[in-house]
Length: 466
Image (cartoon, rainbow, N blue to C red; front, side):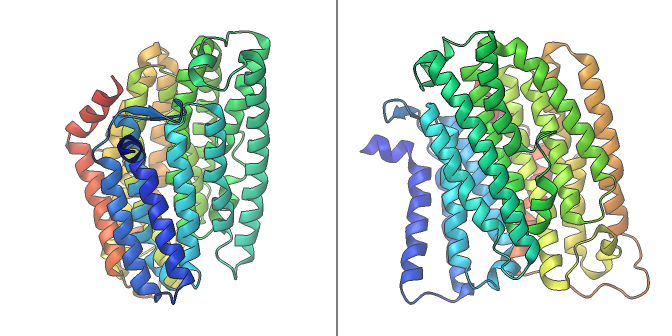
């Protein structure tokens, strides 16, 4: 029993929080302000539980594997959910179904925790479904907006298609190997047509979840139509969990097909960076802008994956930590502006500094980091991704990726320039930053700076991947 409690501490903590919310909902209930404070406290406790005291072991006949790296990755996801609860306080406080929203979000987080620790394809698939289905319901939580319902429908359709494709790939792998266990499958897959087809189906499902070009068409519409809290969850938590799972799948199941999938990953990485960049250039809606920005970042994650080494794992894990802090700073500002003054367009951000210096600086730091401008942590995150990708000696690939970073500077700095420009005509209405939102923005801003200058963070992650 002690082994189960130690290895599944993060999952059990999430289940405990879900049951607490369920009992509160079934009872007399609490007002939104009190309930939100309680949930934020519990989520902070979950962050500590996830990061701390990680043991190594296997349970459920080896289907569930936990180690220090898996614990750290779960801690990143738990931190992201905690920050979302802080940064979207304006919207959550006014929503009549806040307990149900958190129950759905935590159910998805539970699935992602299991996904990170899966070492068996059956558990892997069930975890992915648990991580996906609640998010479709969350996308429709802006009950009075038609676009929210449309976003939920597109999310359901894309998830169902990805699920079907993955199931077909898993069935082919089971037919080839006669097993769903990662260790058994590893020794049976070769560079043969049927084996490659199984890989393509499985990888395509991941490409849908990560919004890899050309599987990205649902992303911008879902990001725009969903509540900002859900968009933030999709952008950082969902992408983080799927990225961690993709590392496991490629390196544990398909090492014998590495030559084949290297070429595929290189092509898709370049397409994803180029399409994400050039579509981000022409966006005026802030959430659609962040959608294509996140697509571009996925291209850099694929770049590191192509390195096929331990440095790829450590660089992606470090980058996801930085990406959580950077992206959530931008989404936090977007949530406050949409909730309080109805601003959704980039052109409406002109003069934000005059109205709210706190929001202006937090947004700027987040965008500096996403652009990879030193000393923000995003610079080192992308540098480590480029170094991991360069392990194969494909320097033209690295050069094109670096040029894409230069292109991204334009559209990120365009937003920063507008934020600090003088407003045209009347000044923007004053924006009140709630205390939880201010705390969330402070954590993101401090993290973006400190994660870039404290070198032991990356060294610690690297030591876990050796």
